[in-house]
Image (cartoon, rainbow, N blue to C red; front, side):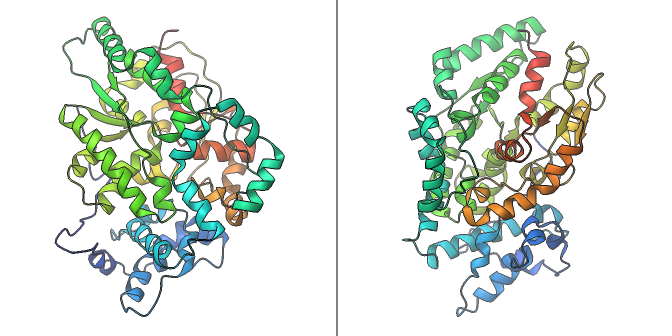
Length: 441
């Protein structure tokens, strides 16, 4: 299978393995203070008290090396969108520096008995909450849907009462996958599809990193991916896995993230050795394995996992002629408005959707432009950051209001949640549209 061009997707930062701890000095020295990163920071745009990514990265590193200065608490206001990484013209590993600085602040300065730390710990380890909530999904949805519950969660834990907790699916994706027959059924369906397509001699197999949201909430996205990939002849493996770690990075809990990273690298590394490529339907999940893991951790096999990790649409665009497949499809798409997730931009895949549908007859697709949704995973789920989250998302909300589209389109489940919250739009994942167009019902 083809692999992504490093220049177009990601460039893992050298971990300097001979050092006893992560040495960021080479990256710091690349900063010439041109402030390109400041111009794209969503938080700096709406919060005048936030000093911006240049300070949070190179400046914090320089100041704290003196030994008598602590990390500035403002690093907790960074929403981990990593847009500054894409804007830097000198290759300064700003996202890596922010993750390290945030972890130092949380470990050494944040009050671990505070309401904020407890809430952040819960958000960081959402996989545990998701597992508990999905055990009795209808009861969980009823309880979390109560206004009294939202009020209590805000007073006790600092969750904004304005936000509605996402509904748990009545059956997890993993439950559906198991009932369907698991990997064996997928292999058989893919073999039949390859025979029908005249490709039976090809070796087409992928391992799916579904993440937390597609497992507990947006299960239809994962199911659409399965049916689409199998129809194109791909055998799918769905191994046991942990959260990707993105909410842990964003909340400064690197040791928690290291634990899940080690497990995921071990599991998916073995599949890579067996000839599998790796895909995810969530851009934050794919970015974690593809970019953040090799930047932050020195784990055996991590480079192989990173170099074989793809966004699900990206992978098909690389390995299949999707344009030709769509030209042969007879489907009336609704008018759509697309929002590119920040983490998709970091990986260089933000233009794939608009390019894919650009020349398809009957498709009307607008684009919200280069804007951040403002939810940023767990950031907008903190009461003290809710107003900033909504102000950051205002430009995106306005773009949707002005667009003629009937349906919003995005790959990120958190962007999807913010779009629904701020506009009321129906939101679809590209996998769902591709399944509608290309898979016979």
